[in-house]
Image (cartoon, rainbow, N blue to C red):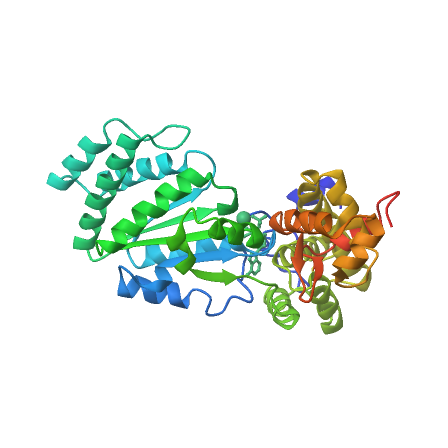
Length: 384
Ligand SMILES: Nc1ncnc2c1ncn2[C@@H]1O[C@H](COP(=O)(O)OP(=O)(O)OP(=O)(O)O)[C@@H](O)[C@H]1O
Ligand SMILES: [Mg+2]
C-alpha cells in the first residue's frame, strides 16, 4: 500500500467515511473485542465482592506467547478499578518489590491526608526505589506500610489488587518477599488480591521450586486460542458495522487463517482493514489473500523471530527435528533424528517448554506452542 494512503480519508462501500482501523496487533494492546474469554474473570470479580481471602483474588494466567495474558491482566485491572479498588500493575523485572512499595505510597497520598497517611509517609520516607531485593529493614517498612494502606482501603470498603506480568522471569528472592507479605496480609484479613501472568511451563517450575508455596493455591487459568467460529462472527460483525463489503466465504477464510490465535486475529483483522481502505471499503479474494500473507509475515517477524533469538543451536536442532512431523512429535523420534540420548532429549524438551516454544501434547508427545512456527522452521535454508 502506498505511503500516502495513510493520510487520505478512506470510504466504505457506501461512499461514507470509513472508521479508523479498530484492530490492535501490538503486545498488551486492548483488542476491539476480547474473544474466547467468557467467564474467565467471573471468579475474580466475585472475589472483589467477597474481599479478603476469596480464592479468585489469587489468580495466575498462563499461556503461550501472544495468547492474551497481558490483555487479561488489563481486563482484571479495569474490573477492579470499576469496583473502586486500588490497582498496582507491575512487570516482574528486577526491583518490582520496590516499585510496588513506591506505588503503595502514591495511592496513600492520593487518598488524602489523615493520621494513617502521615504514618505511611513516615514509614516510606527512606523510599523503596532500589534496583534489587529489599534489604531486611526496608522489607519490614514495606509490610508495615502495606498494612496501613490496606486498613485504610478496607475502611473505604475496597482493597488493593497487584498485577504482575511476566512472572516467569521474576527474581526468586523478590517473589518470595512479595508472596510472604501478601500471605501475611491475607492472614490479617486485609483486602488484597494478586493477579499474575506468565509462560505456562516456567510458571509451574516456579511454583514447584517452593519459593512461594502459598501461590500453589492460586487459581491457575491456562489461556488458549479462541474458537475460529467466534472469530468469524466477530470479523463479520466488525466489517458489516463499518460497511466493508466482504463475502461470508472470505470472512471464514480469514477467520480460519487466524486459528483463533489472538495475536493473529488482530494481525489479520488489521491488514484486512488496510486492504479495505485501499479499495473503497470492499474486500476481494486477492485482497484477503494479501492480508493473510502480510499477517503471517508480521507474526514471523514479531513473535517467532523474537522467540527464536534466545534459543541455542542445540534447541534449534530439536525444533527443526520436530518440524519434520505434520503434527505432534514423539520424544523418541526427535532423539533419533538429532542423534541424542533420552536424558538429553528430556533436557532440551524442558528448556523449550519453559521458553514457551513447545507444549506437551500428551503421551510423550510435544507440539509447537506458537502458530506458524512449524512453517517458519521448514522454510529456513538448511532446515527440513
Ligand atoms: N481474547 C482476545 N481476543 C482478541 N484479541 C486478543 C485477545 N487477547 C489478546 N488479544 C490481542 O493479541 C495480542 C497479544 O496479546 P497479549 O500481549 O496480551 O499477549 P501475551 O500472552 O501477553 O503475549 P506475550 O507472551 O508475548 O507477553 C494483542 O494484539 C491483543 O490485542
Ligand atoms: Mg504479555
